Amino acid sequence: MVADAQDTLTQRNDAAGLLLPLSTPGTPLADAVPAWLYEAHRALVRTVDGTGGRTAGRGAEGPPSGPIDGRTFEAHPSVRADGTVAWWLVDDTDRRLAREALRMERERTAFLARASSALLSSLNLERCMNTTARLAAENLADAALVLAPAKGAWLPVVSCLRGGDPVASQHAVDPDGVPGLGEALRGFPPVPSRWIDPASAPEWMLPEGFGPVGSIVITPLPGHGVPAGALVLLRRSESAAFSEAEEVFARLFAARSGAAMSAARLYSEQAAISEILMRELLPPVLHQVAGVDFAGGYRPSADHERVGGDFYDVHPAVVEGEASLVTMGDVCGKGLEAAVLTGKIRNTLHALLPLADDHERMLDLLNTALLTSRHTRFATVVLASAVRRGGVVDLRLTSGGHPAPLIVRADGTVHEADTHGNLVGVLPRVVARTAEVALAPGEFCVLYTDGITEARGGPMGDAQFGEERLQRALAGCAGMPAEGVVEHVLMLAAQWLGGRRHDDMAVVVIAAPPARHLTAVDGHTRGRYTA
Image 1 (tube, rainbow, N blue to C red):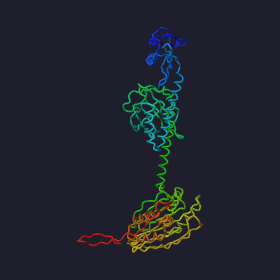
Image 2: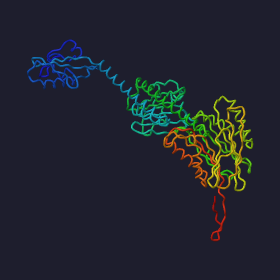
Image 3: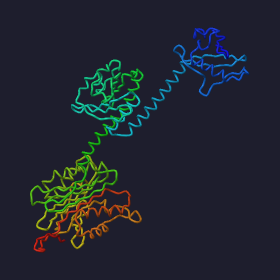
Image 4: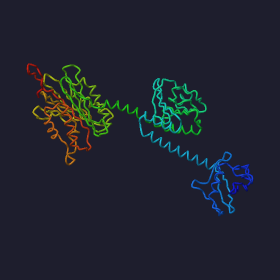
């Protein structure tokens, strides 16, 4: 088409006549073409300097464009020598549609990447559900609900309005009462949104203040082998209904969300199981039993581990007046694998409690159990029977390849108990010697694992803490309570290590409580303890 400076159409070809039936020569341009093309012509004419003969270039935003009869055209002008302007119209519909589809695909890909990063950044199921609801509400719908599999009669739900915060709730409802919801929670393919009547949405599904529902999408959240839940997308009645492409994209998002929720649920279940098992493997908290003070401390070989190859237990006497049994051991190795074997050893020793008076028999039976198990590890074990008679605590100590217990007297004298024996789980029989020791009030016995004495550190970094250094440290602990002795030994070992790697370390102190004397002060009887 050609138009002059007075906005009159002067020429056109047949193609322009088919596209714009009113564009006959002599017709005012404003009556013949769409407004966007007329405005582009007027803007170009104002820029022409009257010299004519030049071709108009593209603007900073490209050539003018707009719709004509349902399609999109670009208008390319050329200024002719006589001052008229020739307009070439190019059908740009397909290219624009392809460019728009590419833009949307890029945006969706970027959104899925952001969603995956946000969802996989946490292994907390509640946080994954909140993140899923928030992302879906902000990017896919006016509101979103994330439903987890029912817990008994209760259905866990997290709902979120666009621009709001996720809200968690539970509802005692039947999911099969909502078309497509029960199937989605069981992992079946989604029902097309056009099959779901928005009016069928129950009250519990609508976030507060949402208003009438215009369209609903319900899609499963697929997990690892089992469904992770369901995603519900809601749009208000004034919003556009979900298109088929949007439903497909919602399923892509749901696949990522379901995988993250499934991983979080699996991690939560495994963490709960590990916590239960770990509690059984951790050394117990010790206290006074039948007038005998017990204290223990444990430090695994790595700061990120809670259990290892060292263990100890105190088994109170069933009958009053009989001895309580203390067991301490050190399994060859470190970490969880060693901890599993310590758990089996502790259970075996617990089953052998009826033989607590016969230490050698207990060690021999434990030795047989280890030799017949599939484990190839060995262990050192020390048994101590403690009973209080009057103010004195009588001990019977038996070592099976374990460092001999140390006896600390009230005057600071330290000596080893006269007990020794071979390792448990190596030879067909365990031969051990039992020592008998009496602890006066204020005196104590120290059981420890070789992680204490073999701790390497010091000024040069390669010297062992050693038995002599341990005995000197214990000599200065005379008169201290059992808990204080344990803390002091572990503190000295940690300082000696200086943050270096080390073996598992365990300490148990068996102490005779200080004697109590009654004295009269100002006519009143008061108690005081003396060592």
